[in-house]
Image (cartoon, rainbow over all chains, first blue to last red; front, side, top):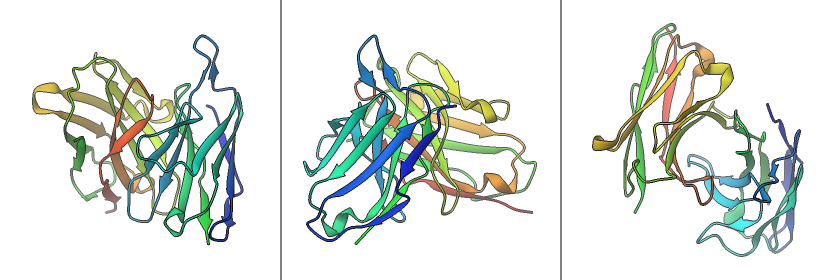
Length: 112
Length: 120
């Protein structure tokens, strides 16, 4: 199984400041034939299902504010929120869909 | 507009079989590249991917639970059914179904989830 490890587990960021969440996979999730990283980021608020933010490691889902960005390749990835808004308080998960079993990180709690 | 909704029992006894139905609209599970997956989340814990069925009836399961899981689809009813045998209290979780597209490989649309408690 590919283990997804997120860091930090929790972080507190002030409004308007940058938030950075890291995700490291135990194996590369880069598929060489199409040069795509099979890595997504989700946001989950209490009592709600996860919301897709980023796929292919850096492609923003339609409707997601451009303050959210994803970067990285191979085994190391980052989700960045450029200017934190109050509505960004949530738990964030990285997810690899490169190989079965698809796996999620343990989650990173973002607070103000 | 794509929507999904999970339905099934909220309480099951240990050793019983759980049957969950995902009823969806706004897409067809006969369209090339489309899939519907099941993901669960124990209270206060992380997400766990369980199973996925594709438009062509290809099925994928998490190996640790493969012997207990069965995923099927009924394209005419726009439904996907997940069965899990031999339920245990550790299977207590919110179970989500979600729509997966070939373009993103990810789950852009999710149901609201259904909490299943396993207790005698």
